[in-house]
Length: 491
Image 1: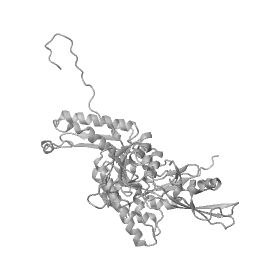
Image 2 (image 1 turned 90 degrees about the horizontal axis):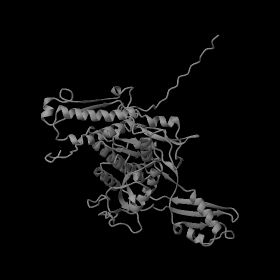
Image 3 (image 1 turned 30 degrees about the vertical axis):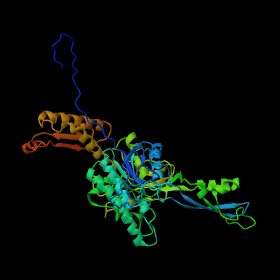
Image 4 (image 1 turned 45 degrees about the horizontal axis):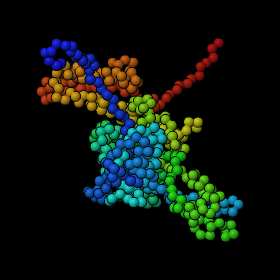
């Protein structure tokens, strides 16, 4: 209070509320991938070197966006697909056969799927450009080095809680040569190892991985399990399978759609190859028919980006403690492979490796549903469930940030009481919201701090204040068991 030397009225505001723990965001993804352009601070980003493995190469720094419109502003639009249309049949009954070559770079389509499924604020790091007027020194081909360095940009962003490189499976060469396939899967492993390693080091984020769909050798799950990192990193990631048939269409340029009329000489309209743009100016009926056929060519995408949106949606509607499962997907017509109960048994629980793979399935009357909620550490009793891992990360990060004010405060009972009170208030609110199990707060959690409890005299002398927090995390009801028996008729 100011010195009271002059007669008058003096006001003093007394703080009655102690410090509190603020909940940190839980579903802020970081996407690394190729973009059409990368406008950073108003200028086109210079990648430094066209080869991502070169020391001079540097991916664009992570940019925070909140919508697809913002994505277009900073990173441009989608890469066009290539289409060839062959007209057969007769003049009265033409048949249009479409052959498509999807673009290698598909981050834009993944971002569409992310926002459509509930995604909100996220970060994007461009690792290369596919513009017709490319950025300076831009890589032109997808590489593990580029994606790994793009993921590393998110280490600088504390807000990121999910890591994705949706284009990673574009590194797979699904050829008839098994050694070639294994070599390309090893490149994917490099990317996945980097994502899981970052999560394990920082302990405040979670990696979403895709399982390659369509291996010519062995099962997809075996290939994935033998090409993902093991040990402690597994609890910080989850894998999803199979790829998804979406309702999205690839973009294309009419002048780049080749049209060939293969009907007999007396029935064909075009005697030489033309383009869709050429057809538009000469025959509106054929043009409309080709457009209708191109509309049927939908995009097939891997599921991790859609799952990032699901995580955000479930966290917002229910909370991070709710398993991101038994949820329908938007802009998806179905999985590319129909999974049965028998097939999922080995994917969900694998005794040998413990690497659980979450399945996306189609159910009659329900649509396309996420039917799995396990981390890659499927044999770990503590960390087998995604919601349990993410709940602990959420509490750890929230308490960590909230207690930073205590640094350099006196390490005394008064400080210990303040910290204990704020942690208990935060956890009580979490328990009341349904985030913790237990009929009472005492059953749901405990907070311990103090000399003789969590610290000894040597700890205090060395400036250590140790807080011990125990949580009774609610686990999902993964297996609902109904027991039936015959009840004998009573006389």
